[in-house]
Structure formats: C-alpha cells, structure tokens
Length: 414
Ligand code: ADP
Figure 1 (cartoon, rainbow, N blue to C red):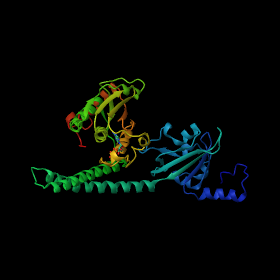
Figure 2 (figure 1 turned 60 degrees about the horizontal axis):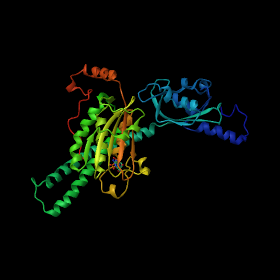
Figure 3 (figure 1 turned 90 degrees about the vertical axis):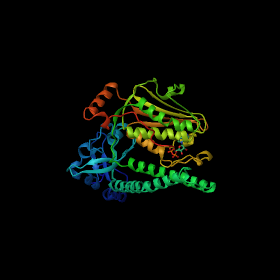
Figure 4 (figure 1 turned 135 degrees about the vertical axis):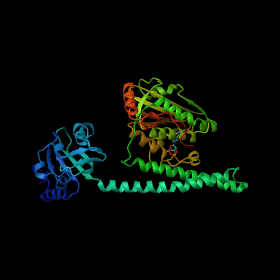
C-alpha cells in the first residue's frame, strides 16, 4: 500500500509509483500517523522494527505498536516521547538515542527518531522516521574501548617518565649542568602535559560508556565544596593570587530570582564527579589568571544549588564562550598558547554536570575575568536525612561509599 493511495494527487503515475517504490525499498522505518496518534501508513521496514504485522498495525494507536523505552528499559515518560511532543507542539523533533522494545520480548533496538508534521496547519499528519543505530553505537563503543585501553596502558609509562625526570631535576637526587637542567625541565613539562592528556582521554571515553553508573549520595554541598577549594588554596596562593570562599558578591544576585546566601544546601550527587568538576574549574581559574583573586562560592535558591568560581584572569570573549565546553576546544591567543591544556576539561565538566541533572555556564569578558556557574538540583532537609539514614543503615559510615564525607586532600595539581 502507498501512503498517497487514499488521497487524490496531481502527481504523475510514474512519480506516484516511484514514491511508493522508494518507501517500500527504504531501510528506515517510516510511519505516518494522524493527529490523534493513529497509524495511517507504515512501510515494510518499519514492521521489522517492532515485530508487528504491517496490515494489522494500520488504524492502531502508535504507542501500542511502537514501544519506546529508555536505556534502562523503562517506558519513556510523556514529556520524553518525541512523537507525543511533536504532535503536541506541531513541530519537527529529532530525538537522541531511544530504544524500541520488541513486541516478542526478544530485546531492544536502539533508534533515533525524526518526527515531523507533513503539512502546515493544525490538522496535519505526521511522519515518523525510525533509524536503527545499533551499528553506530557499536562503532562508538569500540572506539571508546580503544581510547580507554590505549590511554590506560600509556598512562603508566608516562607516569614513570615523569617520575624519573622529577628525580633528575631534584638537586637532592641528581646533579645537572644548567643546560641539561633546562632541557630536562622542558621534557618534564611535556611529560606532565602528556599525562594530563591521557587522564582526560580516559575520562572522556568513560563518559561515553553507558555501562558506567552514577553513585549519587546525599551531600551538604557548601561544606564539601569549601573543603575542596580550601585544599587548593595553597596552589592559588603559591601563584601570587588571593583566595576566598563564599564572600558575598553583589553580582551573584542574577543567578536566580530569589538567591539567598545559605550555609546548608543539600544535594544528591556522585561525589567523585563533583570533586572532578570543582577541581577542573578551579584549576582553570588558576591557569588562566596571572594576577588578582579567585573566589569560590555556593549559593542556593528554592530549587538549585549553584557553585560559582570567579577569577580576575584573562577572560573569554563572547565568540568563544559558546564553544569552550566542546571537546578539544581551546581559545587560541597569545596568552593561552603559553598555557598547557588539552581542551577536554570543560567538556568533561559539562558532561559530568549534566549526567547529574545539573547545568553549567559561564559569564566572562575578555580581559575582565570569568565566572563559571555550576547548578545542581537541591533536595530538602527531610530527603537528605532519609537518604543518609538509608545509606548508613546498611554499613558503618567510614566504610560506606554512599555517604559523602568531607574531602581531606586536594585531588590534583595544576
Ligand atoms: P584546557 O585544558 O585547554 O584548559 P578546558 O576544556 O578546561 O581545556 O578549557 C577550554 C578553554 O576555555 C581553555 O583552553 C581556555 O581558553 C578557556 N578557559 C577555560 N577556563 C577559563 C578561565 N577561567 N579563564 C579564561 N579562559 C578559560
């Protein structure tokens, strides 16, 4: 059956036949649904997506034929169903990867969906295109595994090179003439850069690995972030910069409409991710600030806790601000060229933050310093206590990975 068979059309018979032949031959699933969500047409390929008979599906509601589930196999919620959303908004939608549960319970097919209204106007039909992306996902997984294994394997020899160069440069363990020292210092810097690159690549490949699960725990975020930032204070001060935590800052007010400075703000977060995020942003503030100060604050409104890292450094021009969270993006100017970096830090920050339901953004002006904002959903005091009790009832706190204790040591040097 052709989709145009019910309608009168001015198309020539050849065009008409060609349209049907294309729809029949195409590998993607193509389904036409009415505004009320009933299936009007589906091409043969779409039948293979969910194991239903092509003729039986006509007239049925799309969601009784196309069972969309998320990564964990749970049915997609109403707000996440791209078909329902496209109909409700009467707008085209491209979905991220979703899964089709096969009706014979044989498993899931990873798909990307494009849904678009066919005609302008309210009472239109919609075309749904289902594309099987199993091959792409497999390719991506293989690439990630390769990057992950390669960076993991290469980290150890690089750490060893870095260690021996450190020993060679230490006047207590080796004697060097000035020229050899200058060469080895350069080699040491490069080995540190290489080590950072491998760590970042490993983090990036882990990010894309769906098998890695978050371990959120209840955390009092102000104390936790203060501890991390205080731990990095010696590095900040050693660079000749001033450090402060939680100083009230008149510019913090626009973060949210009803910002209140608060001492106690609870969230449910993976503390290793949180540590990496804060560590990365403060390290950047140190790297890209040559004089002045670094201020770290945590503020909260009704819904969110916001970590703010403000510096008086080189700043970022508006043209670059949209790009700095992309993989391998570095601002290229005379100042950044002299600063080591991989362009992966903020990409990791964004991915990790969003994985925990948060968001990250920057406000900056070239030459005037930068402010990075990292916001996470808050939980109530009751919810915090409930989660904490649930976590501690199973294990003693000192042995329990599900209870966030205040970090003791800075994680990483600049
Ligand atoms: P990198 O390893 O290069 O620091 P990031 O992903 O952490 O990579 O940052 C991307 C780019 O954003 C940096 O190269 C730098 O140009 C810019 N940037 C990040 N943080 C700051 C900051 N606090 N001040 C000025 N520029 C920054």
